Amino acid sequence: MKAIGFKTSLPISEQESFIEFETAIEQPKGRDILVKIKAISVNPVDFKIRQNSAKDTVLETPKVIGWDAVGTVEAVGDAVSLFKVGDEVYYAGDLTRTGSNAEYQLVDERIVGTKPASLTDAEAAAMPLTGLTAWESLYDRIRINADKDKGKSILIIGGAGGVGSMAIQLAKKISGLTVITTASRPETKEWCLAMGADVVVNHNNLIDEVRAAGYKEVDFILDFVDTNGYWNAMAELVKPQGHIVSITGSAAPIELNKLKNKSVSFSWELMYTRSMFQTEDMIEQHHILNKLAKLFDEGVLKTTLHTTLNGLTAENLKKAHSLLESGKTIGKIVITY
Image (tube, rainbow, N blue to C red):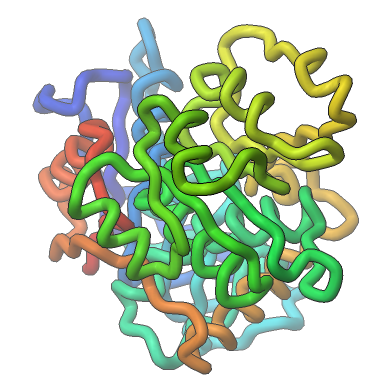
């Protein structure tokens, strides 16, 4: 099969930042399924791993990344019970295994869902990683409950990105929250409002912007941009006994003591935790993807696909990564095969 990877971490403008090569198709064992891929999407985690995983070294075998895919089940392992050959599936994969930038991929059935029937391959490929991340942030970390939390306020920092676009929809359409989100350009503001945001504020001078919009404090905050960069603002804006969730990590220690007097909870969210550690509830991602598929098919949620490139080529992956690295993308970028 054809795959696209890299042997060393290079700037995306370099010729060898991605290379095409041929490799064997592995057959599934145990709970693995073999998927013939039809479309993939790119995420910030892709370019971060490309930039950092092969620094100052040259790998013997190219590293294949990619953590969103849609395709057809070609073969199943002997312990598979959730899928059969011919099923249409979508998934975000496993950070510890070979990625989806290839024609075929092995993936554990417990982190795979049935593709939404109402979405095209490109539309569906945009959704797994961001859908899972947004869902887990809201319902596994904060544990938002529609009955007790309906009408409460949530601030989403980075609303026009892939995860933000899904979090806006889930928070508004599923949980009935009042959604305040950040965007700084006319086109990103328009996108956030189309996703269902009630209020869009500029991320510059965040405290003043939120308060000018009529909110002294908010119940919940989701940070999809920069934990430390917004830490003081989040600590100031969150209500006593509120909850902050971040997906962005931090190169420096976080001043958790700023949350102490308010008894505020803080959670990290990493969508890969369940697969990386083979947690007892790993199959929950299968269930979440199926719940999301049902919501797409019922028209409650809509795809966040924004840009489509055609063809599994090194050039298209370079183009997609270059767009992502600009920090100005809206929604999701998908490559169809």
